[in-house]
Length: 256
Image (spheres, rainbow, N blue to C red):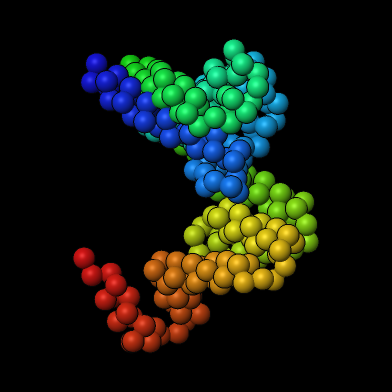
């Protein structure tokens, strides 16, 4: 009962924010939005059909449930795909005019709160009832599969998307993807940032905003590499003693 009570509250809050954020994506750039653009693309792919939205979300529900059982936490599919598309299906069912339903933050927020509470409560309560022995089996199977998906498959998919988006996106996506792989152990963040830079230059040219974005990305990777100790590892791998001042800086930052 405690898990159910907590799940209803958390799911309701998640559903409200997801519903409002998804609806406001359709009002960019006039209004700021909170959401993922891939969610916008998937919502548009269903073409305002309630059944399509429901079946799309249902297709990810079982995978999300298996992840909860195996890993102890729900995946991003719950937020980006299940709750969002089921909310869209609920509001479109009685009114197919998207401007009054899917694009309406108030209606999407209210429906999302109800859908989110139901979905999260369903996933958490059923996962909690699974025997521990079965959870261990699921963990041993799903964890390696999820790691392969995140570390191997997703970078390839995003890199192909960057190359397909054009020469500039392909170049910056490959460049920052390689740097991201070395610094963070995963190329996806770098590829995504490379796509943003490439498409920004394609649309706007080398204006102040694109130059600022490029500079911010470079600073981001430099700081990330420093705080992760990549510079120390570099000196170690080439067989050179780490300068004392550099070691002192890392020791100062790592205090506590």
